[in-house]
Image 1 (cartoon, rainbow over the protein chains, first blue to last red):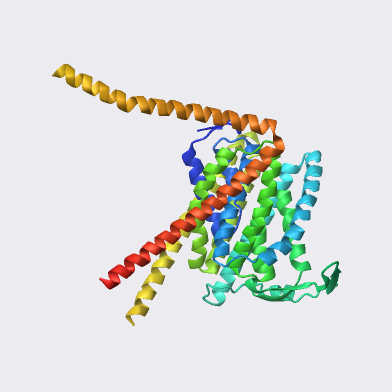
Image 2 (cartoon, rainbow over the protein chains, first blue to last red):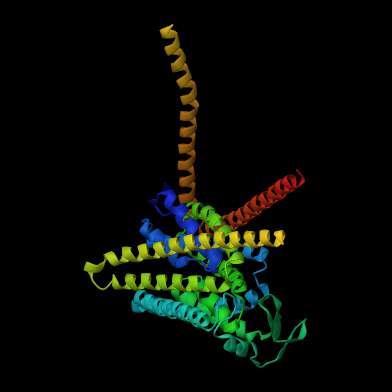
Length: 354
Length: 89
């Protein structure tokens, strides 16, 4: 099929397959899936700038579908999401300034790739370490995390000023209660600073920031895994829309390609978001950790391919690794959901027999 | 008899092929005019183009969500109805 804006011919079946994978992973992990979309589109022969722009349009669309689905499941903490947005937007602007400075210096490509490798490696490694550590202590599949005491300490932070005066509203406290996240009292400055940090790194790396925010909410603030996924997606709607708008202004989005992938992503979203109801939170986290390490390996291969002309094939290998990890994860999610549903049905029939 | 059946077959093929060919031509024309529109509009109206993309993607996402919600509701309703019938029967 011919895509007039990107001026490229791509097999629509491949776009549909990529869309399903992105939708599933986005709904299950609460990430935009930018690294996967861009990598996939580049393999299909889409020009890099259109791969990023069209990818952002798909991130925007699939995160809207997933946020609505997770909201229906009661997994979105709108209050927390709005507070983080206050910090996310200036964070993205700050990153844009740094990006243009790095671009002028001609080192933006390697810097972004090295930051990506460090972030993905550390995060993926920590999530797997956390899972294995808790597993060795006790057989658990629930919400226990090894940073629970850190999360409690962050929740207990008392940051001045404790109240502010606003015209028309009078004096209002700078502490909020977040019942959806199970947090009784939290200083508003904590999510704002968290949003600023995530927005900055998301802007620097040219991503939606989901892969940073989801673990930050779970391990830093102690938010339940499913609520972290839903709230994270709400953030990505805003960052994805902004990114799409910027890329569309410079004519780097192919709407036809984005719509085809979005239709497929909506199917995957139903699977991914529904699966969070059946799969244990600890399993969601370990699968996320493995996916992130897969992403880390892919970026490392991409960086290695720039060292010499002889190893240029590593760039293609990176995309293949990324797509294979994503495909394997989608299959695992499907199998886990089917198994959990079967177990639920069996236990229900046993209960009925009793 | 032979010539009659040949003529009949040819007439049948014509009846089937003519609308198909017309439909195909129409689709090709429509597709090329849509491609032309997409290329021209994006280069002539930058801001409107960006807003159009945001609007189309957003509306499609909401539409797809509503579609899937309706599908799941109907499936659940049908399942409930069939379970009731099998329980009652």
